[in-house]
Length: 405
Ligand code: ADP
Image 1: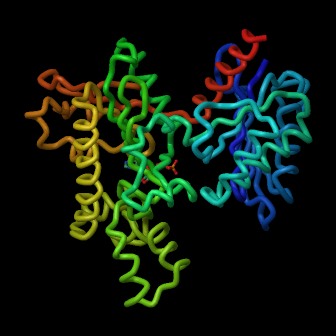
Image 2: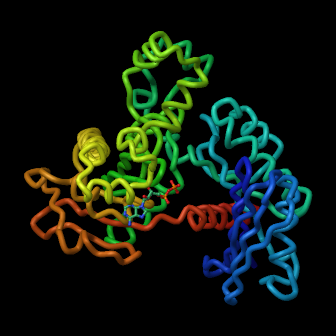
């Protein structure tokens, strides 16, 4: 049997089919530019087929239908019938305060996802469309919602509350939620298995550094603090997001730069971070590193700001947990940039955090340790795999549901 993972966005649907038994990828792809000109479907399977075609797909429902057609296609398909799909796992961004674990989709669960529309206006509505489309095209197959926020539901109140009037939390639910939960949980579990120490005995600082970046303090398997907050804007410097900011800057921009809330929102989310700091019209760290290598000092400063913010959070979370056993780097930058890993850990030798230069320079896309033997803290590079992490949660949930019947 198989597990189908669906990640439905505002104009794309990403899909991956896993074997339920081996959790290996059997096929996957992406339908992008849905509902606009130039809709493209990319598909690849483990038999060596790799295709892309342009054909109009009007909405998420049609996209799911197209995905099933491909998976069951006599020539390119990998399954004979959709009945071979044991369950569908959906990536859902926001589960609010109620969703502490992955959940079988029911009308109640759908209502909770809808209640969080205002908290994730770009993500939760398409996530629901993905679920509805699967109800139509894959009826009677269990659907599971896996929430990006769920892992952070273990945050204590003193970590998730802001210093705002309490009623804004009580009535409007303004609090820190945190994101990238599936990735943080997965890389911490992978770390524990790799170093052969139970997760319940480890204090881990998990650094997810991609276009979006967040750091989480994982104390004995539980997220106890995380850098993203009410929205993914808070915390680290990111590709185009500013991260932590004095809120008074917002009033300054509105008053002196005459920006309305929409423009401020765009500035902070889309024009800031590495893109805004480096000023080379790219948010891609590789381009910024090349600019620095060619003597661009503004690009160099942008990289310093980026790495320093990571170091500050590593320090804060080490103290929040009363120590650290492992620092884990993951996602595009975390997995591929020796420079950022080195800068984030530089000068921490007296705290037992010592990077090994040659191990750090390695390029293998596998879980690996990069600390020097002189350091007591383990430093790891752990490739994240959010689709696989979702599939594992779906399989685990199915097993508990079956054993409870
Ligand atoms: P997303 O958050 O969109 O999933 P990714 O996890 O793919 O993003 O990370 C994208 C980031 O990873 C980009 O800033 C890119 O520059 C960076 N990146 C990828 N490969 C490298 C590399 N070899 N060196 C430095 N940065 C890299």
